[in-house]
Amino acid sequence: MAETIAVIDYGSGNLTSAAKALERAARDAGRSVSVIVTGDADKVATADRLVLPGQGAFGDCRRGLLAVPGLLEALTEAVRVKAKPFFGICVGMQLMVTRGIEHGEHAGLDWIPGICQRLTPTDSALKIPHMGWNTLTLTAPKHPILAGLGTAEHVYFVHSYHITAIAASDVLAETEYGGPVVAILGRDTMVGTQFHAEKSQAAGLRLLGNFLSWRP
Image 1 (tube, rainbow, N blue to C red):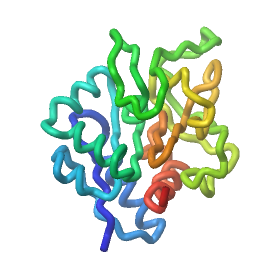
Image 2 (tube, rainbow, N blue to C red; image 1 turned 60 degrees about the vertical axis):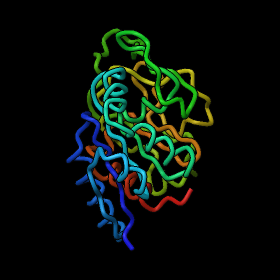
Image 3 (cartoon, one colour; image 1 turned 30 degrees about the vertical axis):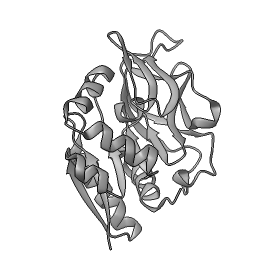
Image 4 (tube, rainbow, N blue to C red; image 1 turned 180 degrees about the horizontal axis):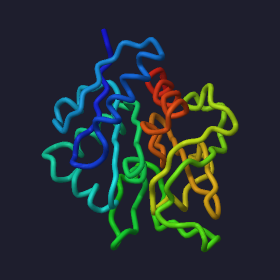
């Protein structure tokens, strides 16, 4: 039976792009999956894998999750109690940490200890938001989600905030933008990318395919 992959709809993120990238990654990997875009808490609860895209402000995305009846509870139980594989994209990754400091302080999901705060490159010539293609440095190259990725993969970023105060063991990859920036984090059955995996061409499709095959 095909696995169900729920791309969570809470009013944020490029849902169609994420869903199509997952379908393409599944075809490339020869996997049979059913990708659904949904904000229905019951469908999220019964899905085999969860993907949380996100774009915009941290606090707005948090409020978006809370605004959909039962969605946050269903997502938390699926990931933290039932240990279903989870993939956060951009702000969907940022929400995994303890809190975000953007237009005030906002609680995150607190699944991985850390803080999301404004990106402040040491080079004042570097623009904010950080937008464009950057090279990944794999800090945990043996993690299954990184299988088949090389040492100089390029992926696509669009962000003004990043993750700090995080344990080194939770960082799977970094990039450089006037200092190190967490590009991929992971713990237990959870992974997240600061960059847009769905827009990162071959490297992004490889990551998504690895996620679909991952048995944490």
